[in-house]
Image (cartoon, rainbow, N blue to C red; front, side, top):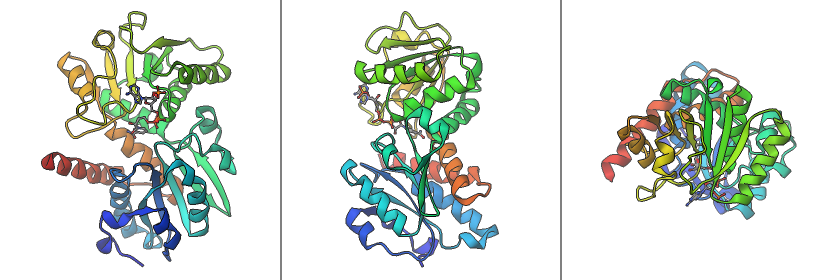
Length: 314
Ligand code: NAP
């Protein structure tokens, strides 16, 4: 059985052929995505597990991997993991929506979101959950000191992360929700789904390229597109729209914040990136798999160390 000391960040990464050969006598966890090599989740979860193992010897054999799997391999990855002693998986881009038909059970909130980021293998069945929304709400409360229930929310994006954000904001009772996305078709699918679940809420779609003149001033802006992952990426919203909001939460993260976060701060708008969300969605998933309280601070420190190291290299 590998010990923490024998596990290097590289050895935590499995591709599909490696998964077929995979043998581990303890309990395995993983994040599945494509691409996945950049993911901080293994370091973050191993940081928490290392601490939890001190008080809970039953966790001694628990390890957390990355699994690189293209969409066409996702189904066989689920089957392999189910047969190889995996307790849980996190799913990231591009798997959160496509996985739904293959699950035995999906918790009601994840069903409303139409996206799943956490799987639990139990008694031969696979259940789906979504911890992104709850992780985001905690990160917004901590990082921006904003109460979503008192605010108009402007959400950018209509992918898996945006679906979770939208449902979370509506569940928390935001005043109104304005959603903008590059692809109008995808935007309309999201809006139709939300209207079906929340018929009484004030809900609007808007053109992403516009200046946002119609969005309410003083709103909370939530950025849930993949724009900003690369430093050279343009701002995901028009600066005139940005000037109308009072706080910015960017789900993308980076050591110095993202371009959106830096620009918002220069304009005097409070802003934070998605590191806090990464930590809190991960903590909620680990709590679900272990049934134990999770040392969130250890996860935060493990992630911060990795981000700082990357900044030193760049
Ligand atoms: P996804 O399902 O693939 O959706 C991607 C979204 O980004 C879509 O709305 C897409 O618009 C938009 N987009 C992509 N490239 C764009 C561009 N060049 N210009 C404008 N819009 C563009 O991905 P996801 O799961 O929702 O994740 C979105 C982002 O959130 C990712 O960066 C992910 O890492 C981040 N995230 C962070 C956390 C965290 O814990 N911090 C958690 C979840 C997700 P179209 O519909 O027009 O293609």
